[in-house]
Amino acid sequence: MHRTIFVLALGSAVACGGNAASSDYDDPREPSGGTGGLASGGADPTGGAPSGGGGTGGVAPLTGGVPGAGGTIVEEPCEVVPPVKGMTPCDPLDPIATCPEGGACAPYSRFPKEGECGATVYGTYCARAGQATQGEICGSGNGELCAPGYLCVVGATGGPRCAKLCSVFEPDVCPPGLICGETDVLNYGVCY
Image 1 (cartoon, rainbow, N blue to C red):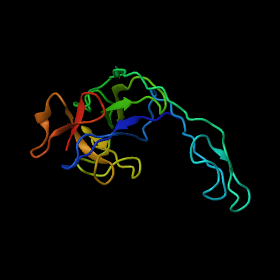
Image 2 (image 1 turned 30 degrees about the vertical axis):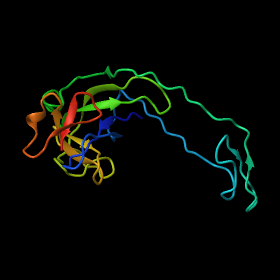
Image 3 (image 1 turned 120 degrees about the vertical axis):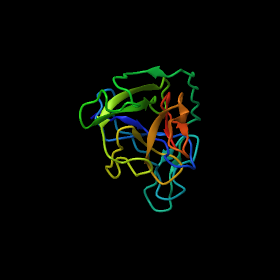
Image 4 (image 1 turned 90 degrees about the vertical axis):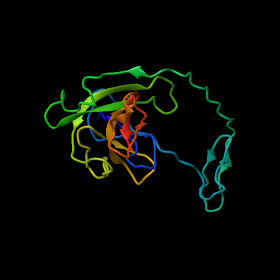
């Protein structure tokens, strides 16, 4: 199954910027995969060592586990790599001009997987459009999609909200009382 990554940022006057989060749109650019879970051994808090390698779990109550003999893992730092431009078949600032009926253009950022190095890929694509506008709740949790020209964003207030898209190069395009704040998608911001 493919999933599209949507940019998320806050549509509120108390936050700035935003973070990416996933959405329910199918997208051929992005293969998806599940994430693994974590497990710990032991029948009580004394099972296994808290650091320096794990241990085997205890089987009887209060017996705990056997500390592992593992060492400390040292991660190599990632080289700083500039973002890479991906597909851009449409313009999010003119969201319905090049998308099929019922769709709207949205920007995306695809980050390297956790623990992997690489460049962030950014671009645009056509997605289903909704009707939610500035400050209204959005996202896969409640199924509401943002209207064309708005982006579902997460910031400092309660949950994902729709916010008007803007260009960080033309910051004076927001309604009175709002400013264009950066998101994690290169060149695009939202009015907050």
